[in-house]
Length: 294
Image (cartoon, rainbow, N blue to C red):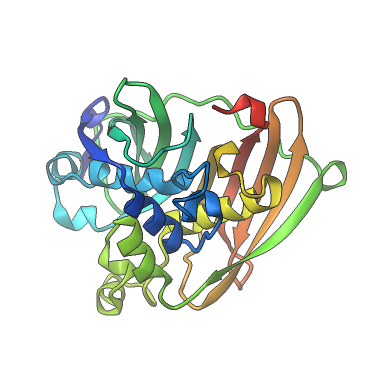
């Protein structure tokens, strides 16, 4: 049972100094060998933008806050990450001292259970925003008490262009057998359904699953490789709605359409499983022009 009275509660802030080791490990975990994120001697070395989820995970998984948000341990095991929508205000650099916190912004009922929304923000030592993420989770089969309190509506995404009006591309995301284990350790995001087959099957799953944020991050890498080769710092936003389960030993297909304007390159995308189901739907990325990004 989830009480909608938790809306407005703040997560405890977590501070961390982002090390070169951690930055390189995250890039390795998703197989992104771009020098900007995988070579600490590169002149513009930075963290892969998706490293933000490694900073957010200790915040959203804080034991005390988790118990307040979802009191029953069995209910917490029924959580599924539905949406990750991150805005990157500037790149993360090695040695920076960062703080990550957040707020519960919504609790509401849906067809399959109760949804919760959170806004998470990572700031630097001066309090300037580095990353802002909006996330939604679904607690399958879990009831809610109190009135529905969905989050305030965000500004709508730019409309996806018609295929005839824009360029497009496809890319293959290779998911090897060890990816869930590698990502777990390199990202520091552990849930045994991603690494332990016995636990996954006990939870009613056919096998261990690939983290949604791993697929999301790999999609981001593929988009940068196509739209801004070697310049991940130009990625300003990356959004995705997670859907079909992704299993190890599979090849995913990213399909994207591109549209350019004064703001930059708008990318609408989806990631499909071998069966053609959407592992990521309603995907959107924005890459700004070089002069527009700090």
